[in-house]
Amino acid sequence: MPCLIATTPRGGLRAPIADTLAVLREAAREAGVDMTIVADES
Image (cartoon, rainbow, N blue to C red; front, side, top):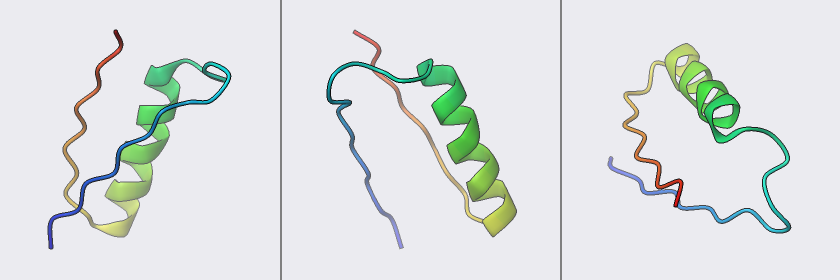
């Protein structure tokens, strides 16, 4: 089942976005979930 998650950091990023996305990718991989991440760093 497709799912869309959108986030907007409040008060700025606490960690580089690449680190955050790497954690999400690893969690998805461990759960056996196919995940496509599209990031807009503008």
